[in-house]
Length: 223
Image (cartoon, rainbow, N blue to C red; front, side, top):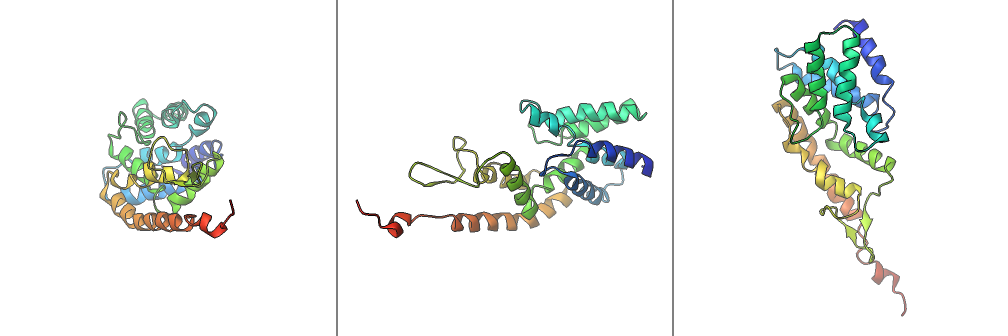
């Protein structure tokens, strides 16, 4: 890809990245990881991969405005139209659309091409380790969701039940702790497993620090 094309796609991407948890730095980290993984796959179409990485989250603003929309599907459509406007072929634009549409984990939409699988892995790596925890906390804060929730007796909801209130702990159990087995490439899997240790350590340390189990005894309130 020549520099002019890269800058044109980058400029288009930057016009949509307004979310702190999905800012331009997220895009560049995903691109970096994707290119790193792609070194082991000489068959990769780098132009398709680079364009897909740069544009994979441009549909998020639509999803924020209407949560019923899927940012991956919306972003795929937007990317297709934009790349066609640059004169790229129908085949390549559909390929980019497919990569973006399948970068979000959904059972009915799984990545098929090597470029799509690399984008999927690179994006998921950005939710692992210290980085993943930091971004999740940013996202939860924007959504006004707490670090953890408690019941009427101040007992902490551990986030292990779907019916519990939304919180970081719930996100940890239903997303962060489960994504380490979902990678397609061995390169991404190896990186993720290294980062997993930090994630687990953070969770256990957090649970220890937020415990208020002996509050009543410490208060010693009179009846």
